[in-house]
View 1 (cartoon, rainbow, N blue to C red):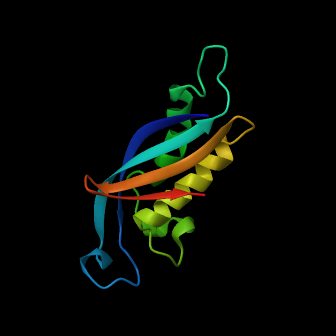
View 2 (cartoon, rainbow, N blue to C red):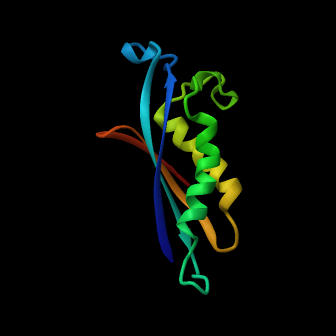
Length: 122
């Protein structure tokens, strides 16, 4: 097996619900996102998946969140768009686009600051 990881980013605003503290107020982050996939086999070029393809597919989903108010996204109706839920959302959306007989999304980590991240995997 091979593991491949790309990092991308997006900026967005949100506020946590059912939370008591400053983060219940509207605020924003410049999130970093690490997407890790596994590949069982390499292609003729020696690649599990071209990083360009992985970045492009992640970019399609990231664009839906970039410079948005995340609480208005239907995926976060009635739940806080926390880093935990954002990582789960990205994991499932990317799995729909990328998973096949060879490639599987292994995990998605969402960094809300340089020192704090949440990672989702199954």
